[in-house]
Image (cartoon, rainbow, N blue to C red; front, side):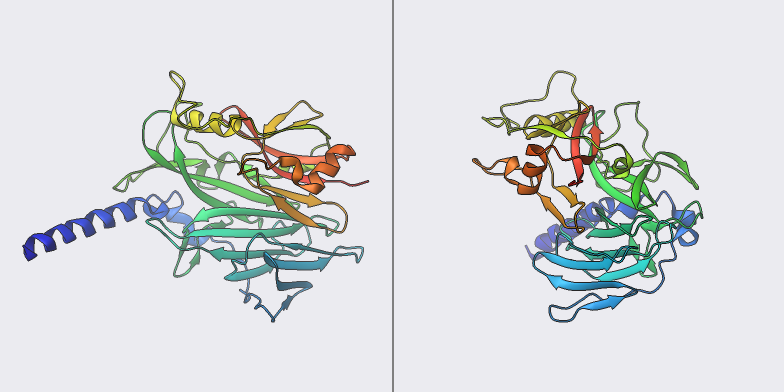
Length: 357
C-alpha cells in the first residue's frame, strides 16, 4: 500500500514536472544562440524605496505612495511632474536613456509569485520625450530571466535602443492548444513600437505550443489564424488627437460563455476576442473608431504630468463614465491621443493621453 502511494506520488511529481517545464516560456527560446550577446546594457541596478525611505537617482526620485511607487522628476523647462505606478511591486530600478533621445528614463521592475507557471514580471517604464515630458508604459511578461540577469531586456539590432521581449500565452484558431507568443517592443523617442517581421536574428512574433512537453521550434499558422495576442504598443500617441464623441455603457444583460456560444467555424482566439468586445463598454472617437474598454486603460493627463488609470466596470451599477477625468474630457471635448489595438478584427482601448487646453 505504501509502495502504491509512493508510486502514485512519484508519477504525480513526474507529471507536474513535465507540466511546469512545458509551461516555461524558456522551453522554446527564439533567441537562444544570441541571448547573451543581445542582452541590453542597462547599467547599474538600484534598490527600491522603502515606506519611509525614498531613493534619488540622477534627477529622479522614487518613493512609496498610496497604490504604488511614485516617480517624480522635471522636464527640460524645469516644471516638475510625478506619477504613480499601479502597484508596489518593485525589485529593481534602472535609470538610463532607453530610447537614445538624449533624455534619461526610468524602469521599475517587480515579480509576482508562480502557480504552475513561471513567475510573472511587471515592467513599469517612464520614458521622456524630447521635451522631458513623461510617458508611462507598463507591460507584463513571464519568467524571462536567468542567474546572469534578465533575458527579456535586449538590443537585438545593436542600435542602442532598448527592446522588451514579452512572453504571453493564449488560444489559437486552428486547434485546442494554448501557445506561447513572443512579441518584441522597441523604445523610440518616448514611445513603444511593436516590432513585426525580421529584427536581428529572429522574425517576430514567434509562437510555440503550450502542452505537457517542450516543443523545440516555432509554430506556424495560416494568415489570420494566429494565437490571440495583445498589442501593448503606445506608438499611436504620436498621431493626431481626436475627441471622445460618446461613451456607450456595458450591455445589459451582460453576455457570457453560456449565453453567447462560439459561432459556427469560429476559432477559440476569435471567439474570446469577440466576447471581450461584446461584453464591454465602448468609446466612440471622432475619427470613427468604436473601441471596447475591456481591460485596464492607462490615462495620462497633459497638465502637470498627472497620471491615473481605470478599470472597466466589473459589477452591476458601475459606469465607465464614473472615471472623472475621462468623463470631463468627453463632456468638454478635450483633444485626446488614443492608442488602440485590433485583435481578431475587434478594437480595444489601451492608452489615453488627455490634452487639457
